[in-house]
Image (cartoon, rainbow, N blue to C red):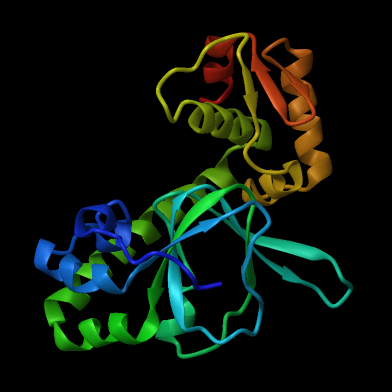
Length: 231
C-alpha cells in the first residue's frame, strides 16, 4: 500500500525522531517525496518478503510488526507508536522486508520512498551524520526499555505502561473508562510476557482494587496506588 497525498511539510517531519535533528533545508529536500497514507484498522502495509521500496513513519495510530512461524503461529516482533519508524533496516541493507506490518487502529502513516531518501543521504554527509544521531538516541531509548523489561517484574511494567499510555494527553482521571489501544496478546508481546502471565498481572491489580477490566476497557480506581506499584 503506497497511495497517498504528498503533502508532508518539513515541520511535520520534525515530529519523527529520525528527522528531528536535520536542518530545515534538509527536511525540505525530503518532504516533497513523502506520502501521507490514511489507513483503516487492519490495513496490511507490507508482507514478509515484499520488496523494500521505502520505510514508514507512524504519525498517528498503532502498527504491529509480526512474522508467522512455520507452525502457523503469529509472533509479534514490535508495536510501533506515533513518531517511530519501521522498515528502514531493509532499505539500508538492500533486502526484502523481513516481517509483515499491519495497523491495529486507524492510522496515519508516512511513506518515505527508498531512492530519493538514499540520494539525499549519499549527497550530504551532514544529512547522514544527523540521521545517525537520531538513530543513536532511539537505540539508547530501546536499551533503557530493555533494562526495564529485565529489571522490573511484569506487574510493575504493566502499571508503568498503563499510566504512560493513558496519561499521554495529561489528564488521567479515576473512574473514567479507557480503552486499550491494542489487543492484549500484542500488549503481552510488547511487555515481553506471555498472554497468560499478563492476565495474572491484570488480575493482581484488579484484586488489589487498583483498577477494573472489562474486555478492552480499563477503569482506574486508585491512581496514586497504581503509581506506587509502577515505581
